[in-house]
Image (cartoon, rainbow, N blue to C red; front, side, top):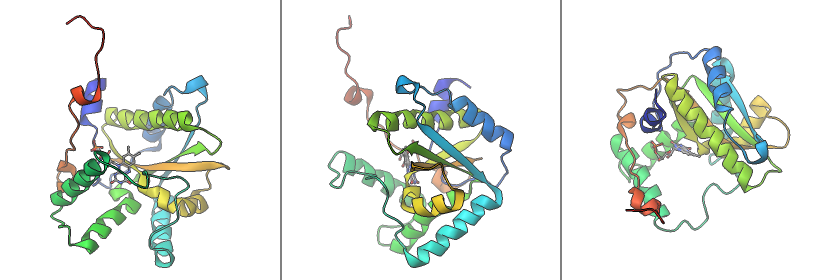
Amino acid sequence: MKVSEALQSRISCRAFLPDEISLETVKSILETANAAPSGGNLQPWRVMAVGGEKLSGLFEQVREDMKETPRGQKPLFNVYPDDLQDPFYRRREKCGEDMYAKLNIVREDKRGRVAQFKRNFEMFGAPVGLFVFVDQAMEKMQWLDTGLFIQSIMLQAREAGLHTCAQGAWTFWHETVARHITPPENHVLVCGIALGKMDVDAPINQLRTDREPIESVAQFIGFDT
Ligand SMILES: Cc1cc2nc3c(=O)[nH]c(=O)nc-3n(C[C@H](O)[C@H](O)[C@H](O)COP(=O)(O)O)c2cc1C
């Protein structure tokens, strides 16, 4: 698969088939993604791959903890700016609205929206959950490095015929995750990543999000026209 094909076919998959993914496949994806660059070659990321009963046990634990604290635990970092302004606010709204529209969940259907959000904590049916951490002593640049690692995982998954969904939502359950899988000490959960085979018939997987035209994103200066 060409890099461009991997980039263009990667979407956030929100409905997976239950088909098992072998440990060998997961290892190979992570091993290749681990070639991601990092400033000073710090390699500040850590990843824990969770499957089988350990993963279903985590889903169960989140459901249990939801009874006590329905909104979860305060993330260890601000996931979005407190006062998200346009055009970012507008883009976020649209992405949510487009997603719920694919599922015919209208704005007034709060229960439907909450139920869909909770699917995050079942990895949308994926058989493997990856949990990505960064050393808590790290700065913004090392978080950026960790993002490169995450994208590398998502692209390499495409080459393996698999799909992914990065899930910041797991940061709301970072304590539950830590209790259940015991991450390395002094590491912050950056996000989860659902990994598996896409259910191509699921309406939610028909969602294709917008991108700004490249002219709005990039400037080209000093080239001969
Ligand atoms: C760091 C990160 C965290 C995300 N968190 C979630 C999440 O918790 N739940 C979810 O359904 N999608 C999540 N997404 C997916 C984004 O909504 C998605 O990438 C964006 O809308 C663009 O769509 P695309 O991935 O299909 O191209 C996340 C993506 C990233 C990169």
